[in-house]
View 1: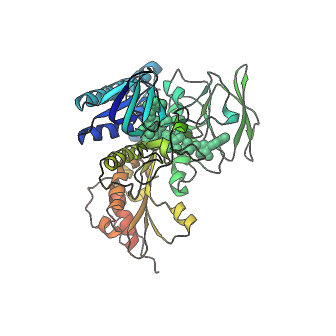
View 2 (view 1 turned 45 degrees about the horizontal axis):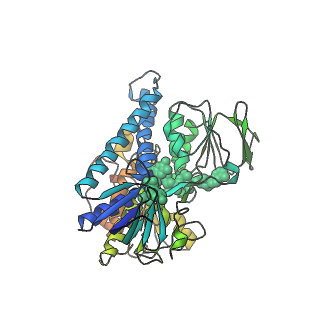
View 3 (view 1 turned 90 degrees about the vertical axis):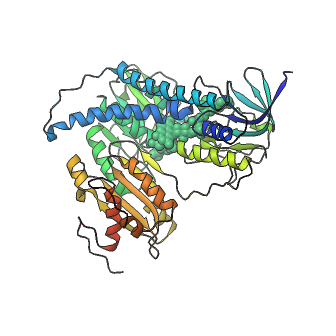
Length: 471
Ligand code: FAD
Ligand code: NAD
């Protein structure tokens, strides 16, 4: 049997959860080792997720903005798209950032091992290179993988998950996107901007289920003009290889053609936690019915020495939530009084327009029967939005009626994702709507709509006549 190397901390998984945890541990004086089976650090987010998709979305926005430019008095010709050049851009971004992570690991003396890890027991890891490692503490950060439920399992080069879709082999003759969630809309937008006829099939009655409908509407309206078709209340029951592509069998009230053929299929129906094949059965770590590792408020599992963070430890599956949890786990290991006591997790859909929200949503408040006051500021009253020609946006606050404390913020519009930081700070600091309206916002900016929404609550919005409602 191989010799056993002793470790103070081993982090399994080098994504935004894992590398943030290993780096913080090193900054705080621990000796940390990071194990990842991939060639580069950065995890799903950097290699095949957040970053490549946002690089592609930037290209897509350039194209759609250029197409829209005539109304600003500037005309460009039809874009000549060099798919290899588009791919080269995102590959370069990933290379730069992952190179940066490798340098940061080196500077901090974080040892990086490229191997697949598996638990032999509650304090020992076996790596695919044959080595064995005993740890005082371990943080599991193995992330998630695309879900491929039964009817969507067809193995074919024409059937893609986000991983293959990001590779951008070319612009397909037609694309059906199964799932109108984050990935379906972001990557659907990219392919549509590149000139591919895109059909989105979503099984629920609306795009982005769970998100407030008034935030989704402006995006849906714009996507109606960009996508060939958006089919709601529609389910894919089977995928079949056909001579000309993939035959997609559809079921639902809005189905016009029961089994159309598409050149390519993008399956984007969610992700599942990467908790299989890790030898967790050799430990006391518990897994729930969906495959998420069970953790407490410090992200400790039922096995005292093992913590779990990020996508593998529960929803929402977002990079910044993984990073935050990684930091809590490290501080807990060090005996600091750290717990997941955040009030909100921000969420951004990076389409055009973007949708961003944080804290309590109107939908959640209604579902819980919680009394809240909702105050809306339409971007038609924003000088900045008017000058950008993008007045379809909306900023809304969800406020506690007695104290006027800001419980949630929802925004749809260009750059909504950049505006959600202010909302997060307000929610975390327990700010009231009055605090927001008393905070000077630069003019003319889209962020003024946050101030405006707060003023609407008091019936005093300068650029909007909305007298205060009598209670
Ligand atoms: P991951 O980033 O998944 O990293 C896990 C790492 O563990 C991987 O590198 C893997 O190689 C390694 N690993 C797994 N098993 C083993 C093993 N047994 N041994 C060794 N190594 C192992 N989130 C956002 O917040 N914003 C976005 O804009 C965004 N865009 C996205 C776009 C796409 C297309 C996708 C797919 C996801 C996107 N996400 C986004 C989600 C985000 O990528 C994840 O929430 C985030 O990566 C989770 O981080 P993590 O550290 O938990 O795991
Ligand atoms: P998702 O959960 O966001 O959306 C999946 C969609 O597919 C849902 O609308 C669901 O109703 C629909 N669906 C499920 N089964 C279906 C079927 N058989 N037929 C038709 N529709 C079906 O999942 P995703 O888009 O795959 O993304 C996975 C996760 O990755 C996200 O939940 C998010 O956590 C993360 N992500 C985040 C970002 C971001 O932060 N901007 C971007 C991409 C991915």
